[in-house]
Length: 258
Image (tube, rainbow, N blue to C red):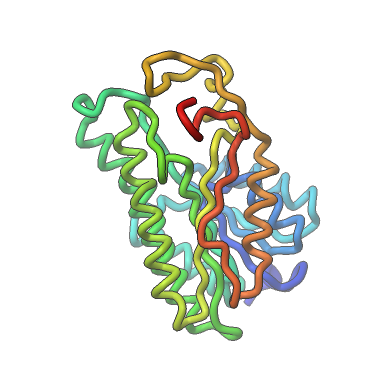
């Protein structure tokens, strides 16, 4: 094991999609809590920049490892590296995901559908599977997996069939992981995020299509609120678990009829 695992409080976290947006915010918050953090994504340069920035802020180890989480071989290599460098994994945050522009369901191409499925669902499954193999055999045994479900895990937006389908499926994966992980002291929970302020949600203030056909501006919340919630979920002892949590802009048009 290298010196990566000897910093902070000795806890190790892996955040997928950790180079930008919500993932970056989560990685920064976990690092500030004393975790040695691994961030992964497909763009090595973005990851390296993010890792250096977080480490400079917190003084704790942050390692960037590029990986396409939809590729089983790359995911296996990622977790092999975590095992070699740290010897264990305490928290996996399945945050990575992508979307396609809002288009009618009948116009979604098979390539678009397959790409969203790989990024949002298959990637989370592959990382969860590898985390199980590591967490159940490490000492102390067990760990925690936190999935980014999104508001779309329960309520779709218009013209979002591929994204919504994968996020609904994440809820099933979360519950199955929580159940199957019991015997290994692996806890699993899900955070459903509504309108965190990132580059992806910048269009919210300009207006987005609503279910009644109108275009309306929607409020957002700082990513810090989401990151703080993830830190809370991660801080619990393994005998306690937040199965689902929704963190959203109070006035976003979700509850009721908008």
